[in-house]
Length: 391
Image 1 (cartoon, rainbow, N blue to C red):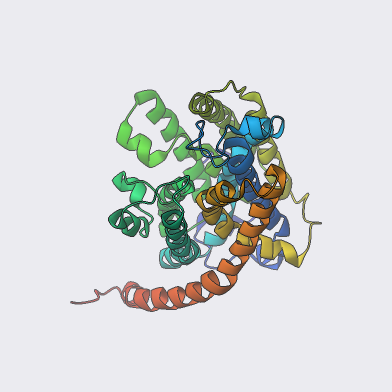
Image 2: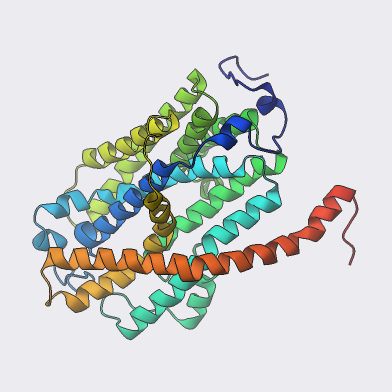
């Protein structure tokens, strides 16, 4: 038995798979604040890439053709730390994946992830390749074979460069989905999710101590704390906070402090500048606190249909903004002041993201969902009858 610290308010959620969400959870309105946080996280990353990083330390690598601390003497300091928006994304992902997988089958979980990730991604790969091929002023295009492999979203596994550098986070997300699929396979319950968080945390500690490369690659100790914290926060939201859940979040935060420090030191070395990790730790901690406020119901007052639209455009914005944005900055840097150019590129990327969501992602997602659902139907019938599908 698990320790008595686990106190689930609904016994059925703690013992058996829940075929449908609990009535209390089903009646809750959409978390508009979560959509807003997605947008904030994405804009933090955009700000980092346009103002705090720019593509590299040398003139040939940088979108501004000079170091960003020369272009933005003050703001580049803040921009050099807003990469922590990615950490916020990972916490949100843990929260959302636990929420959206409750009561779903493994086939439904697989379908939802494919439909969510691939349509906008396919467009972004092709659009970014087209832009950097026509104007290879900051980033050089990849070869045709590498671009085709990028369409699978598995290029990182084959040590092939991504069409856009931001795609590295998608491979992290996929590995998280594969790990959480083990819970979905057995049936998502309060007890199993708790066990998942605890076992993943312990395994990451052991892997880090033992230096096992393969296990390290699978378990991702450098990113796992954010996902685990997000999952635990969803349990707080769906049920109620317990001492064990607070402990999981606290331990995850402590591990996150270490990881943020290591990344900040590495970024400082690549940029050739001195950077204190404390601002990054503060921003990461703020992300934890805001998500905790959401999990505890403190942000339920936030409403607005525009937030739903903003949340929907966040993923295309993230996929499109970096290499296309850098190319636009390099081409227009003599025509507009730096801040005006940042504003134009940000608004332009937001508009492009909405167009992709409305005219590419939504229609293609619907087609893809129907196709996957039909394709998985024989497996569902086989599972329900206990027979094989045949040749």
